[in-house]
Amino acid sequence: MIIGSHVSFHKDTQLFGSLEEALSYGANTFMFYTGAPQNTKRFPIIDEITLQAYQKMREVGIDLRHLIVHAPYIINLASDDVEKYRYSVSFLREELHRIDQLGIPFMVLHPGNYMKATKQAGILRIQKALNELLMDDSCHVTILLETMAGKGTEIGSSLEEIKQIIDGVTNKKRIGVCLDTCHLHDAGYDLRQFDLFLQQFDALIGMKYVHCIHVNDSKNEMGSHKDRHENIGYGKIGFATLLSIVYHPLLDDVPKILETPYIDRMYPPYRREIAMLLKKKFDSNLLQYTKTDAK
Image (cartoon, rainbow, N blue to C red; front, side, top):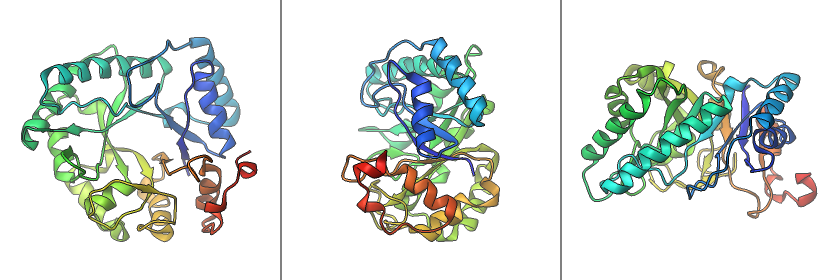
């Protein structure tokens, strides 16, 4: 299984530090933000550190093609505010080139919020922005539209909305989808019927577009549209259902990324959660995670 989690990305250690953190969790892939997701402060990519990370990945058998970067939350390609829209496009362009410099092929993006406008107007703005960005031949990163929970004015909580965005993108080679289990559940999709969901996805959009899975349980009932992640097996989706998703044969080659909450907001659960999924055995002591366990 290609499985990992969200990890940090620091100024001094960069990709090598992210790799080391992922390895400490027993992961063979990982995802990170190139800076704080809430702001635009970024630091230069140091190629020497990137090359050190490449060497280490070759030694431990991690494939660069399985790594994921997440776009910052502040980007909103559906914004009805002209200045915010323009800034979102400009900053996303910079992020894409930073990711390209790192050699990472995929960036997950929240489609956007239509704010005070209409949903259809927001979708058209997303299409326009993506077409502008993806016509840049000097960049090779594929943008993965993340399925959303439908909170507020979010776009992308239905497969039909994701399909509409993709249909309006000219460069289909650089567009794809990231399925988030918590978001799908909160949007109203019954993941206990995951085979049926994938059949629907394939018929509407096409499985070839799926390049990442965010594996999260949910604190909320199905269809709540609230988007609150829970630790694996401790939420409303449940361990058995999540296990059936990560081991689904149609998703063998797709990286699975955990974005579950820290225990007591302090300790990363990823080492135990990855082990739990690999062993196919629920860990009833996960929430008793201690600082000693984290080492």
